[in-house]
Image (cartoon, rainbow, N blue to C red; front, side, top):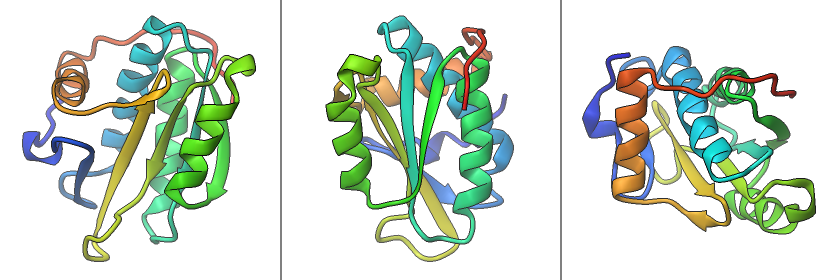
Length: 147
């Protein structure tokens, strides 16, 4: 998959919806993040979103990608980012220390993005770039995840 490299920031992924971020992008991100989660021994990923109009479509595609990688998805719906982090930090007995919040944060309304915690810690820098590389190579785990 071709991705816009500038969407991959130091601490998150963000960009203009319909340009850098599309449903196809979100599904591939789900597959890449899910593959990293499987490699880390995770069984589930919690997903949430803010109130932006683009959020529901991006979340649906993200969930499809996570499930295709063999991850069970816990969809919290519209919640704050700390709620996603809290659930990821407290569901360890269920095999879930990971989460993704779809949020545009402080950016203009035509933007959106993804904040991520993998296996109990926020990912940044080289780990975010590894997701980009995995997406470009379409190097994904496969399995029967549930939503």
